[in-house]
Each structure stands twice: as structure tokens, then as C-alpha cells.
Length: 173
Ligand code: NI
Image (cartoon, rainbow, N blue to C red; front, side):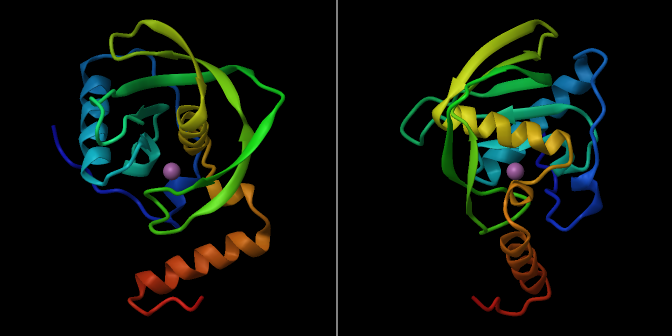
């Protein structure tokens, strides 16, 4: 296992379409485990392979709270097979947009089909924080960040703040 560096926006690798995995083999399993270690080290609840510079349709999630047992989920080639008509607004953040948060509108619940770490097809129905997280991570596989769901004005404000932070200057609010 290894902690991998996480890319921060704006980085063109975060904006590219990731490739499907042919089979979940030892190499993909290793990637999933490294991504989980990276996510836990960064105190995240989800991480997609493009965020560690790997253009593959792989993501990991663990939405267990600190007082609960870890519950890691490893997915390859996830697909949304059903989404609720009802939507909800929920505040999101992202390890690739450090310290930035905004409310995003998404379906309240989704059913996701994916390959697990043993290359078995699985399906889960996800709502609440898991539903939001899986939709957010799947967006990463298509080069979409949560700020891409916001107005241009809000998105540019957040990206400017990140650029200033990167140059080591205090961000103006
Ligand atoms: Ni993210």
C-alpha cells in the first residue's frame, strides 16, 4: 500500500475522460488499495483514480463515521442504472479543491452497477451521503468537478481562490 499524491485543480488531468477497466486484476486491486490509503490519509470519504493521475474508471468510498467500523467500497466501471426523480441540494467538498465547499443539486438516490475488487458485478442503491459521494466520484471519471455544477460566477470565484492559495497569497473573500 502507498499514499499517492492528489492532484489539485486546475490540472488538465482532472478534466479528462477516464478509460474503462477491462478486468479487475491484481494491478487494479493494488490501485484500489493505494487509493483507499490515500483517501484515509487525507480524511476524505471518496477518491477517484483521475485524482491520483490514473485515467481509469476506478473509485473508492468510505462514508463510515469516525465512531463506526471502516466500510471501504471499491468500484470499477460504475454505471448509474437508475436515478430518483427527486433531487436535493447538499454541500460538497473535494480533495482536489482543498477547503472549498458549495451546494450541489443531485438526485436523492441512485442505483449503481459496478465491478468489485474481485471482478464480480454488483449493484447497490445509494442515498444520503453515500448517494451524493458516489455521484460526485463518478463525475470525476468524466472529468467533471463539483464546481462544474455551479454558475460560472461561483466556479470562477472558487478556482481563483485556489490559484491564489497555490501562489501562497491569502485568498480574498
Ligand atoms: Ni472530488
